[in-house]
Length: 193
Image 1: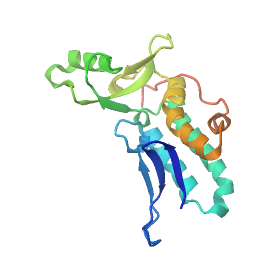
Image 2: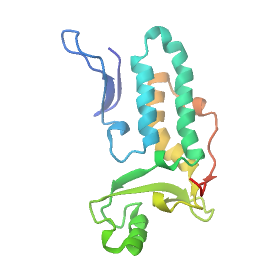
Image 3: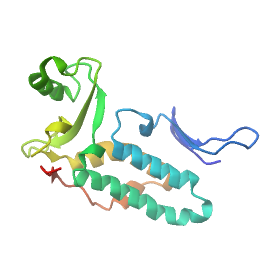
Image 4: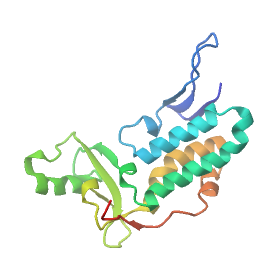
């Protein structure tokens, strides 16, 4: 019965009944794929990695490292190719100190009374403004001409969630070995997309 303990209240494993019955489905607690605000690229990658590590029969696990590498490359490709719909993060807006406050202010100017209010979930994407390199957030509907901040997604969004899982299960430095330095660049969002 495979199980991965990442931290207190953060684990995953296959669920069975005490008598050995049950479907053996993968259950997760406290992981990013359970959280509403996590971007789709991370949720999809975590689900695929867990299926490979926990559900794949032992005889086929030798090739699962190649599959895990493909999952990581696909996730990084979403950031580097500016696949915006897979990179949208949404969190509850509380006050001025939240990182996505600028998105709320810009939407209030544009939309007036229909803009988000305190407690609403606000979608945003990490971008680079004017080549400063500082991580900034922008409304997914206003991305034309902005660069998706791929290095930020790789180091601050993907690595803490998927990297932690890989390093715990497959050994230290697995994330860096699988990434191989690829995909850490800024990509201009295609205005036709």
